Image 1 (cartoon, rainbow, N blue to C red):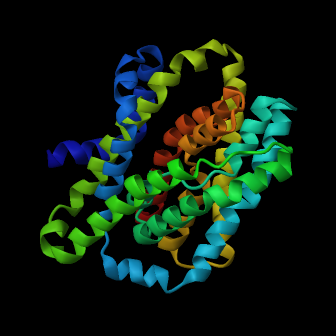
Image 2: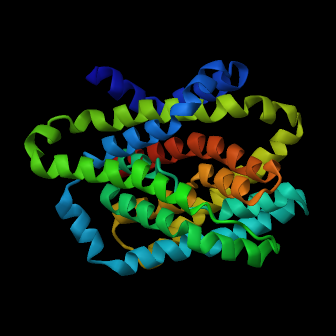
Length: 309
């Protein structure tokens, strides 16, 4: 099993591409997995949280300025870039508003996994992730209204439940186990990234399955939506690298890179549904979910090779 996990991690970029194609052409497995996506995300967070202890978290919490930097990068330049790419690719309408909403989403739950794979500061990434998500219901509606003139209803209950069940509880359990049984948990350090990679693939399949037909129905225009998603994703890496102005530590910089570039797509659907807005507004987030799950393992691999060079 150890060798299997390590093999999946080593070839994750290839596996992501294979799963993405299979998911589009044969959506049934993804549709079957979709109801359990929250459980998969929580399990992924648990696995990643086994890699750092309470001491690492306390070190992060003693530097609140780092969290303020992450909040600024995630919600200010990325929101503006979402608005700009939305107008550039779609002009006006639901897709343009959806691209704007995409830009202001908080960090994706899978970000700490990519930070782990890229040998970054996982504890920092996990804390940044939790805080960004917790503040999302209070920040996004104001940003969205300011940039689009459209009011969003806050699905506060859903967001809090997601934060608690998918991020907070698994993190506390994982960190608690690492802190209490350090030697035992550390014995399996070599497999956590691989186990997380397997969960990552299952999550990708669960994202594509229910949305495959909708994506295919766009025909050639799907490439335009995908291009907009890729443009914003690449811009996210560039904005994340701007942290280098204030952050000199390589491991911390990697945490910012994925914290800023990855977006929690499911929150878009929750906001859209709660507000009674056209479902098409959530479409850019669906495309972005797939794009970021393809690019981020590649970026993580490149960062690892650069570190070993």
